[in-house]
Length: 200
Image (tube, rainbow, N blue to C red; front, top):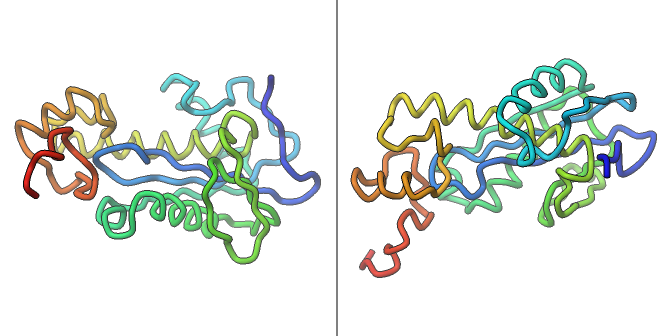
């Protein structure tokens, strides 16, 4: 089953998605994309279904051929302040604001969103596996975030972010246990399973 081109025909429709929601460290990154009606690329799919190499091929193609795209980073401090769901929605709003064209309709991956500038929107569960513009947004969000995590990995190599991208892998948790959290960790997240037993 291929991806659908749009939810509503013949209007400027933006797809938006985020990456890094379940991570213990680093920002949540959101992207919004408006694609032209004739957009096509054989690799385009939900970014989670793609290899890193495929995403790296897609990103410049999307950026070159999209009618407009925007990417925004919401820091771990902001995530701790407003919670991850609000930070994800804020990121999507910020990336839509960066679009050089104002969309007439917005389609959102997931089931939670707040209205943006009175533009009608539709939330779509697993939207990144159903609609091209959301899939394109998921590829941009993921590649920009991975690039950022690889950069801060050089600053804190003990946490293996180049490999785990901040997700709660055994290796990442073992590093938190050994070295403690650093400035990129989300302090409002349960960084270690045994935190439940600690008197925090």
